[in-house]
Image 1 (cartoon, helix red, strand yellow):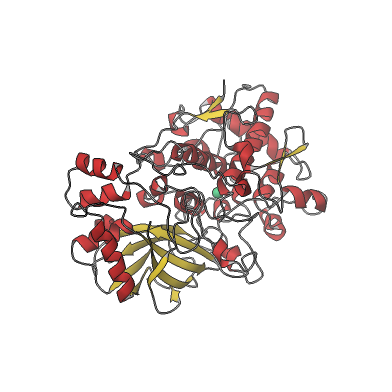
Image 2 (cartoon, protein in one colour; image 1 turned 135 degrees about the vertical axis):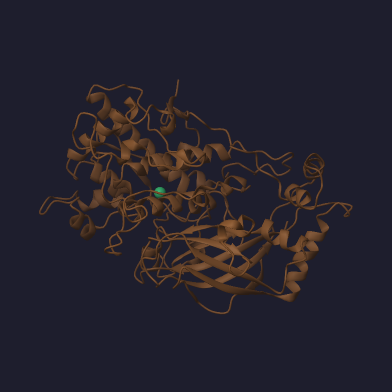
Length: 526
Ligand SMILES: [Cu+2]
C-alpha cells in the first residue's frame, strides 16, 4: 500500500501529528552539519547555494567546513528551472527529502508511514492562508518551532496574502507536456532542454517557463518570500532559488505542484485524436535524460543514487511509493473550439458534441502577429504598452476564427494566440505582475477578469539577468495563452489594429529596474 500525502488543510489544526512529526524531524535535520548530505543545509543547497548569502544568513557557521568540492559538484545546485525536467527533477528531490525526514521521524519514535503533506491553495479563501503550524513561533510544548522562519516577508509584514489570481490553474488546460518552442506554446511541463539549472548560457530559447512552473509555482514562491520593505535587497527565503528550500513550507508547496502533475495526467478531452495529449513525453531525451549531468540524490544513510525522469513517472513504484489524497482535476479541460462555440452562443451540450468530433492535428510553427516598439520599463504600479498587429497576420488570425464556427462545413480548432514577454530582466526576484489586455482606461482591474491574461513572477529572474549568470543576461521569458481574450474581442467587433497590454504590480515595487525587451503576440495554428 503506497503512503498517502495529505492535504495540510484536511489535517487537524494547528498541530496534527503529521505536522508535529515534520517539525521535530526538521529540527533534528537542522542540527546535522552541512557536510552531512542528509542535513537540512545540504538538502537546501541541492536546490541552490550562495556561499556569501548563506554565511550572512547564518546557515554556514564561520570557519565550518563545507563538503569536498567533488561532492558539491555532484549534489548541490541541481534544481531544474525553465526546462521540461522541472517536474521530474523536483519529484525525485521531494522523494529523497521525504525518505530522509521519515527516517528521522522513525528515529524520534514517530510513525513509519509518515508522508509529506501538501498545500493546496487553489480551493477557497481558507486554503490560501499559511497553515498555522508554519506561522506559529512555538511548538505546543513551548519550544521554538522549526517550521517557522522570520525570512518569510509575504506582503512586507510577514503576513502571507495570496490573491485568487496567484493560484489559478489554467496550466491544467494545456494539452501538451512539452511546448513547441519559444513564441508559441511552452507546454504544461516546459521546453526541451539539457540539464538546466537556470537555463543554458546565451540560449534565449531556453528561458521560457512551462505553464505549471510559471503559474502557480513561481508566483507562490514570491508571494510567500516577499522582500523586507526596510531593505529591498533582503528577500525572503522562498523568493530566491538559492535559499528557497531552506523554508520548510517549500516542500509542501512543491508537493502540491507535484500533485498537480498527476492531476493533469488525468485530464481528457471528448475525443483525443492525438494520443500525446495529457501525456508525459515519450522522448528518450526526457525519459533517460539529462545526458550532460546526472540527477543525484542522497539516501537516509548518506549514500547516493542517480535517477532519470523515467524512474519517477509512477509515484506508486516501490522507490517512491506514494499517492495524494486528491488527484482528480478540479474541472475537466475544455477544448478550445468548444469554449469558442459557447462564446458564440451555441448551447454547451451541442458545442461539446461538435468539438468532440473535430480531429486535432499537430501544432504548426508560431507566426508573429505583432510586437511593441521598444524595451519596456516597469517603473510604476501600472504600465501600458501597445502591440500593433500586422495587417496580414491579423487577417489570417480572423480567418482562422471564422473557420471555427458552425457555418463552416468542417469546424476546426481556432488558432491559439500567445502573448510573449521576452527577456524580462530584473535585479530582484521579488515581484509579481498581473497582465491585462485592453483594460478600459481608468478601470479597476478587479472588475475586468475577462481582460486578465495571467500572473507572472520574477522567481529566478535575478540570476538570469546577471551578465555572468547562466542565462548570459537574457533574463526569463513568459508566454501566456490569450486565445479566449482575443476571440472575445473579435466576437464583440472590438479587435482593433492594436492591443493594449497593461502590467499591474501585484507586489509593492522593490525596484523600478524591471525591463521587458519585447512584448509580442504570436498565433499558432493546427
Ligand atoms: Cu519551486
